[in-house]
Image (cartoon, rainbow, N blue to C red):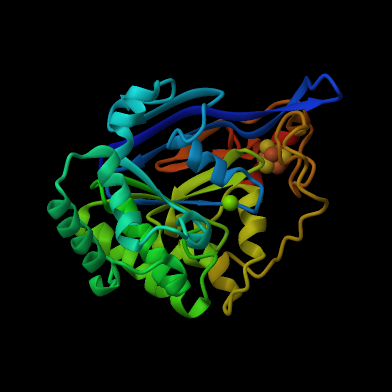
Length: 337
Ligand code: SF4
Ligand code: MG
């Protein structure tokens, strides 16, 4: 399909200020040069360990922040440098489902008001039209419309997430960023919420960026998967190719840590245990940002930041192992000389 979202060299740095004078002494590079497309109707999974920048990336794409640099196009419209008027006009197109429905729903507002709030802000619906729309949205997410006048605390976690999803759908968006939408829910109801998201996608033709640390869940829901490490995308591939044959050393380590009943199904039984901790995003290593922990590190990795490039049709990797003449990790001995 065509690209609905086009992200180029997206950067989201947060200034570090120290001392009494709050001097600007550096930057936390939470997102540091991310480029990818999201195709209309697909679910792009964005995975990585906590702190890798995936949530910040999702929020930056929706321009919930003033971004540091780069380009974000939604449906052909550049919003990377857009001002408040353009953002307000684009807001209905792009919405977010948050991780913690408890924290993201105003406890003093009824469900009807929570779901109807975007309609107040962005439409001129009459009260009657609004009530009808809120009821439709409640039906759509499987909430009993008789509960429209209740408050968030009267609902279970799964129902509260349905409220959050209904609110995200109110303005008929095309693109939704789902930031760990099931991480705060009981395991027993996670599948229900995921199924709902899938049904809504099929019914409404939605495009998702699905952010998660849960690799099994992403394997279930995603069309393609992007793996983030320390503010950058290490690898992006169609789901089955990524899980069946991970290319980037970090992806291989990440997948080898997933408990799997049949280890062969995860590309071999060799577990890679990564040494060391994730470096601080305020002081990332020179060269490849994975060089301090990579089991395949080469001399060049300490000097040169590998370009994120397409190494096979549909497969994108940022790693020197896959540069010209090094088509597979087994060739690395040749490229080291
Ligand atoms: Fe490892 Fe070098 Fe590839 Fe980075 S560029 S992932 S350090 S082999
Ligand atoms: Mg997060």
